[in-house]
Image 1 (tube, rainbow, N blue to C red):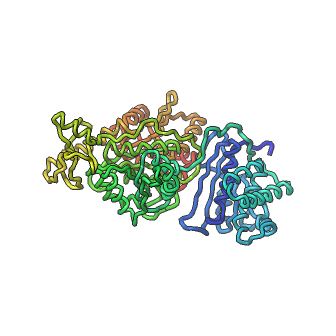
Image 2: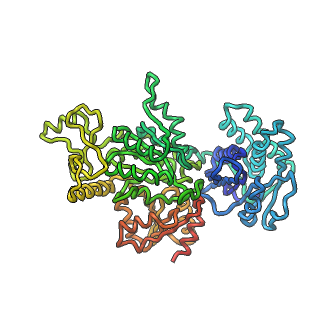
Image 3: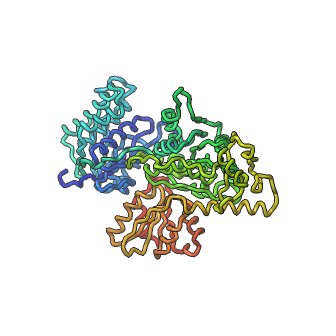
Length: 600
């Protein structure tokens, strides 16, 4: 192992869903984190409760790359059903770890691979008394085997076990026993490998936290002032609201023990969106969380909120589609559905975080945007960002107080009257397209109005007049144009003299960051723009205009974001080339490099 590379390793663990591998993979992954090695974990799980194949990718990168790695260095095959497929994924010269309690089938042997066995079943049968626990404890055997082979200290795995199961000492001891068994077996057998070694990087993960995007979004919503959540469970967004349920009582319970929030699991998505619109109209900071199929069902309610100008936040964790599609795989294919949601002419604000810190920040701010623009606001996540654990900068608490926009209370209405004015619900007061609003219960006779989803004039009076309707539609579009100067601006990274540009957004950011380094190493310089919101801002136009060609990387088949960019800037459309990757896997830098190098 002396000549092996240091802290550059990609491990794939192939097991079955429900076998307890989540715990063993967590111990392995968090051990790297405790050693200070930058790392990432990607879980590819089936769309059933248990029994089907699952894969977990763990990447250690001393250089700080967190995207899925192209090549698999080490494959742990603990699922016979997929073993033949799994060994084919391993790079030439890579290592296969397998359970040699029985013979390795001949069809799994490839001459260009290294094989090391550990008798996991035999070890748990000998040392674990409970037959019911053996299947799950077996997975901890490979944790110990990998720890010995690659240099993870046993005491580090013990610390992680204590972190994970600290309230259950017996569980800690039982799992640690199995880790020791795998470790000592490899040690006694004299097994070795020449692929990589893992070395602690003191301070390497200082000031970094490890969490999931859905958790970050849940916390952001709480600190952003959310008080009403109406939802219907759907993968991969369910854990977002589940995290809110687990945490919100700490922040929304008064001194008398009364809850100052409502979280309602509706009978379906149609009911949940109706609850969000009703609560938003009543003045609450209301939200829902869903995925593509749920978003499809919410379209009519979103249209109501748009034309009635009711604030609401929609957190969308995208998955593979259409229809059921790939419900447990990642994609960025609901962009158009968010941006132009509902029938008729609509344009919505979409916030696009790229890591957990920005998920938290934008989740907080989404409620301000919804209130200020009196409209549905979408937070765009995907399964990779939402459900996979990742390193992150610590979350920063909002520096500014909650922004409610043009919300008039009794005192404001009295001041308006004193100046000779009156409240007109849908009147453009200052030319930005955004009217004033009141909420039910405001103690002033001039506060009331009829909210409606049909055509109406500036005083909220029903109208089918053509000119009145056109004026309403034009004002709603003006709000969208006003938002261009308010939404988060893109982040831009320039290289001297680069003629090519890359645009990424969301979970595409990390693989694009690594892809740029690979392209640069081959002599191909690129600039980079990280898109953070819709509508597009002027910086996007300027970036495209300054480059001969711009590659826009997105995870869908039809180049949905590319089409939005081309529609906004038709004079620059020819410079924007779509790089689409839509196989449901988290993006890898190598895929991006290959497609860019092969682009015409």
